[in-house]
Amino acid sequence: MKISETIRPFIHLLFPPVCRACGKLLSGDPSAILCARCASQDVSLKLPVCDLCGLPVPAPSDPHSSPSSSHGCIPFKPAFDCIRSAVAYENPVRELIHQFKFQGSRRVRPYLQSLFADGADRLLGNFHLDAIVPVPLHWTRHFSREFNQADILAQSLSGHSGIPVLADAVRRCKRTYPQSRLGGKWRGRGLEAAFCPGTDAVSGLDLLLVDDVMTTGQTISACAAALRQAGAHHIVGYTLARRI
Ligand SMILES: [Zn+2]
Ligand SMILES: [Zn+2]
Image: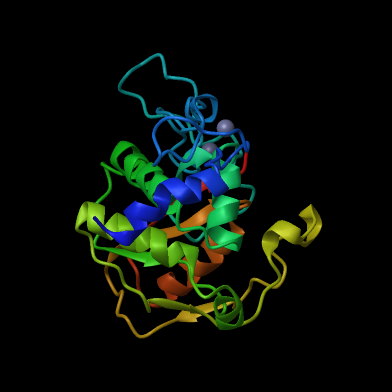
């Protein structure tokens, strides 16, 4: 028996496990991170989805016609070919992503990684993919946070799918203000030239460009533009969650 297993009951007495999303006391499975009510919230984005933005669309009456991509979902011309997201950015996932990203919580990682892998199985089966590329953090932010959540998601998806990660295909070359803190009219400003090609060759490759959350799509598009500049062939964006 490991020491951690010996002392776990005492730790639980001192710090009873609570639901990571709503704070309710948990009983039963000691490895659970969510209460039954939060675990039953289904925030996955279901098929059929828009070809371009990956948001669910009504099922077409003709099963052979593809879902429309003309509903004005992305109000600019993106540098990626299309984008998909595993879940909506709503609770309980929103709270778990916050703990993963800003508090570095390791407890919530396996749950988020499995949502990411399940979404990939459901949504990415029709795409040919040579490599996975994480959206990079600017090094100053990486330094303060010590990890890049997109790297962690990319590595776990690589373990699940067998598709390799190119960790230095693209770099952030100019500090940008977090998009989530900017008002609508400022979003996207300052992203031009925010990314530049790295040392990993991507010429002719079909890439999966991954990040944790899609807000407007402009960050991922700016990153895709640098990969295009380096000769990438087809670029599919894929995020864990999508603000709706
Ligand atoms: Zn809960
Ligand atoms: Zn759309």
